[in-house]
Image (cartoon, rainbow, N blue to C red):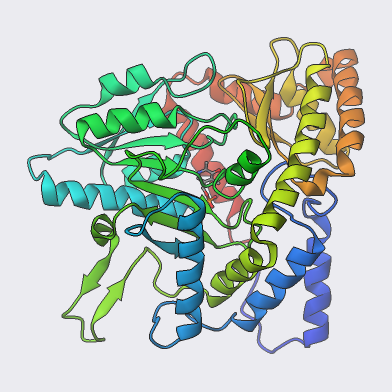
Length: 442
Ligand SMILES: *Cc1c(COP(=O)(O)O)cnc(C)c1O
């Protein structure tokens, strides 16, 4: 017997809205800058506009651009504006997707189908990607039957380009670099990787899901951001998430290709379906009009000026936080992260215990491993909270130092257990069980 049965009769609208508000009570508090991931909050003016834009188009469907010229126009503008921002030329083409993962799935599928067309001798395709590349790439490899080949990092936490060169072989259909990679916020050597890919005549994808809508503005502010986009000749495709530093509503990303001809391999078409001629550009069938409208609205609201102002504020807060962290004995920043995402590591502190202690004080923390670190993604939402955080962090470190045994059962135990398992299949079983338990029916 399931616990939640299908409701026999309806509930009053006012009561439902009350319940929705109540449900939010236990959620992570991003609005007051208490989270370091998941929500990229640009402030109330932006939120308000995206909410209204989303609402206006919440029933419209981007599946059929013929029926909704409004959505077609907005998507065209969003893709075009993004291509312009990222150095695209007249041939650059792209689509909006539901997020970074879908953009990446499409880029990998496109590379696979392109290889099938032009290099039919390849029977077991491989993609060469840094270990820090987002799991969406290995997910794509798993879904599309491609072998992932991982490039290790240098001591600076960047993909080791020399090793990448050696890992490319006759089966390689795609090389990947991140601008920057999520775990440490460090930029891969994009120009070098692009050169290697061009030499081997293989496509090269730059994952700018995280950096796409902030790096260009930081560069304008004088931050020494190296070129990372279509301005570099060997870059053939890119992903950039509107719902991260683009501050759009969730469900919006852009995948771009240098040439429309290459993009053709992304499309799915079928001409013999009784339901009609079926043509779909990306993974999704029905596509939410609201996500397209909200993304369009925020790009128009902010423009280059607005994004630069937000980037400036974000940069100031990031500097403040990094300076405070490195002043704490035993803590250091991993590599040289240029934007507002970075990781703090330690050889002496138990960071998992510190994170547990901070969570008991109302912070939502992100733990990483290999090596252990805490992850930070800064937005203007941390303007007020950053000093409180620094204070709470110092207190948390002191609390852990005085009672280390009190934290033995927390996430320290979980990471310790996963790390000590003799082979990954046991860890995978544990993680699958966790997913089941988080998504069970009662
Ligand atoms: C967030 C992220 C992704 C995946 O994006 P989703 O929108 O979460 O699917 C891919 N790459 C990088 C670098 C990211 O930060």
